[in-house]
Length: 328
Image (cartoon, rainbow, N blue to C red; front, top):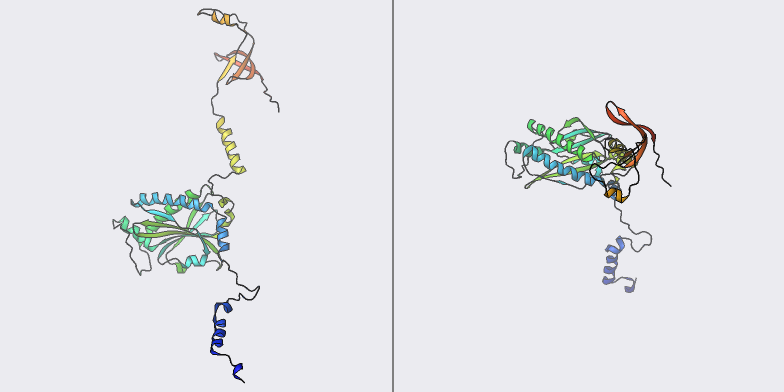
């Protein structure tokens, strides 16, 4: 082997740089084998995009929650709606901290069971507020694993108000009827029916000063999937045949009680301007009383009839209804 067959030090460095550099690792030099980016959240984003009305519903409920909290505890709290998330149900359950007020609710006509979650720090804060504690938003970290009886009572009250605002916010899209099935404080006792089952997470962040916590509503996606057509529009009024039929029935019902002016015209005839100008109090206009009277409703001829008396009152007996035909 001659000296010409041995690579120089510079050539060796260049060769090693080629294999250790980015050019050799990303495969750009091989046609048809390049790396293509893939967004694994595309399906989730597509599913949520099909239900834009959820944003309007959540904002409406957040405003109602502000009034409920002020009425219960006399404090001014801010309630902000986080972006609705679509994630696996077991991940949503695994993210619940212990202890928490976990309320299992059957929400007819939705299928399955949803979860209304009130964290322990939220319950303890409202307990302090109820008994006259500080409202500066300070939060305490605790290693406790269970809720106190008072916190469980606060959980019942707040859950009841949350469900009431939920029903009111959703009523334009679907009439919900909540039924509390059970209560749990330890998320370890909850299990998802399927590891791959998806769930929607609605999070309402409550802020008082520097303190903040959230009430979460976890709903299996399969429960809301049949409502995609109703949640596909953010408009509060859907233009559908059922809505139009409702309005038609409403107008037909209400129009029956509108008052109209009914008048009877006994006789009419031509009169000159000179005769009108000559009329004075006490003047007599000669008329021949006819037997047939025209009945008008709002000055529109309606029928012909005969005048007479009934129960001591002047009356008209209808003989013929006038047909108002319009040319097409």
